Image 1 (spheres, helix red, strand yellow):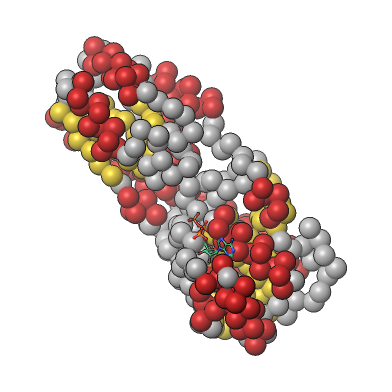
Image 2 (cartoon, rainbow, N blue to C red):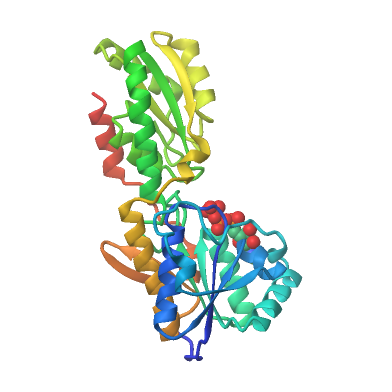
Length: 331
Ligand code: ATP
């Protein structure tokens, strides 16, 4: 949505919701693009919480030195209940006005986008969002910042677990992040050669899974790995393992829940470059007068999508072909 162009003098930057590797690269790119264009930059700590608590500081190009390779976010992040209230947003707006901030770059997930949309409608402050979450579950983009790194982290864990699983003839259930999105489970499962992948978007009956494992055992597999996305309808990896074990005890069974280590680590090259392109684009879009939108990538092109559109529909991100290929590769 392009509004009448108001001159922007100072851009506020913040990260919000769950952290993701590559957020720092996006911060760096946005800061340096703003400075390059002669604009001032305010860093806001702890997302919307920092606007309310007035934890803001002046950023220069040295504020973002040596952060491109770091996981997490130097601006910290938070989930802020108060920002969901009109009173909280009023305080946030007053603090931004006092700090001279007249536009915002928000890096986060769909909650962050919703907050940005509500806020910019209420106070007519230009805002551009950047998708940062390991889950790859946001609309308006093929990829989110952090997703590639998380996949690499999970593959690394699968490879290591495979070594020990094969030595002991074990069946491992590995739980990965993804409450609503099976993107990490599917991609890392294929890349790690998993025997089965359980996804939130698909129903997998336990009997069907047991059948598949029995057939694999008949083919003399020395180890088996089942990837379970945390949002799978059968429950987490522990539940699935227990139910499978009740009927199928051919292998010694182990469960490994990867948990928060999937969020951390140095961002991959792909995430650093994606974040840099998105941070650069976010500031340029604001300076062109674009607002209330999210930056995304489609194929190799950087695009923008109005927040209203990005928040109103659910894109199916799961690659259906890959779901089928994964089954064949488990032969
Ligand atoms: P992740 O995908 O990692 O969970 P997220 O950005 O979706 O990241 P949320 O905690 O859902 O994380 O949202 C971040 C913050 O955005 C919330 O803590 C809240 O401050 C703000 N927010 C979310 N929804 C709203 C809303 N409806 N109105 C105002 N603010 C909101």
